[in-house]
Length: 207
Image 1 (cartoon, rainbow, N blue to C red):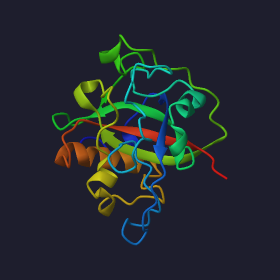
Image 2 (image 1 turned 90 degrees about the horizontal axis):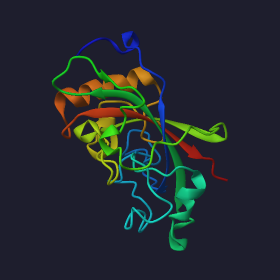
Image 3 (image 1 turned 120 degrees about the horizontal axis):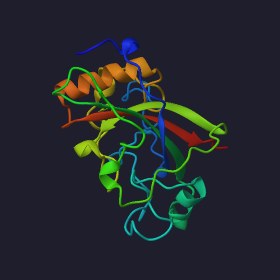
């Protein structure tokens, strides 16, 4: 489908902000070698309890349904979920993979989530050097504007596509070219309705 991954020139990733997810270990034997689910989607590795029950209460979500800082994300975790939750940072490859197009639609940073321009802007990217880079996820991207109400399905984990696209211990893809191949496949065959985007997933180191 379309050009080979190595021939596609992508703009720099767009920093979206921070989220919290509950730690979700799995059996490597059953999950293609993955030891935990670190998808962008909330379907399997869920948000902490009450994470977005009151989305407009401070600290406020931005237009990508993320928080501006890691501390803001921590503030939204209830005490009962603190131990079992992890803080993630997300960076979007600004290209949309859709069934009706042979090549991805490249977006400018200003166009990312412009659909929700009445919500807070995306934050400037902080120094992420202390975070662990986990890999790339490929996830649904609704209406070319994403979903303010949280991320939708990540077929690598939600639809067992790890069986067709090898994943690392986090049930993510290490290499961008391989993530592009998965995005092209998902856009064409729609294990869930598209379109799709690629998100780089980072996480605060745990002791």
